[in-house]
Image (cartoon, rainbow, N blue to C red; front, side, top):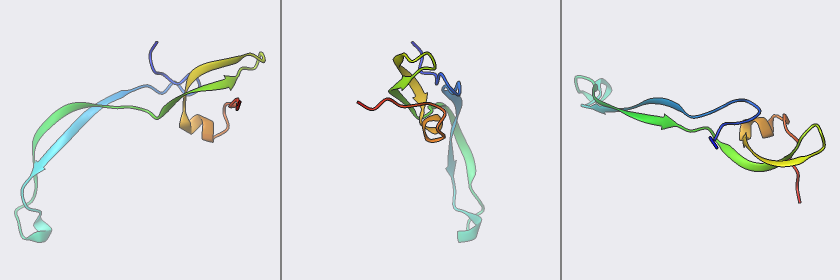
Length: 78
């Protein structure tokens, strides 16, 4: 099963790792330049926790920590 938050729908997203070369203008150079861009993944902070569903059932699911901190889910502690 994919690691997607069941509350917020957060999943991994793509982006680039940017590599810059050169001396900055602030320190006397001609400025930095982008020399390479490589693909990378941004992964959300997901935790596999036990939550209490509205039906009263306890289930282990992937939930974003942001949703847990905001109080969108009721975490079962035992």
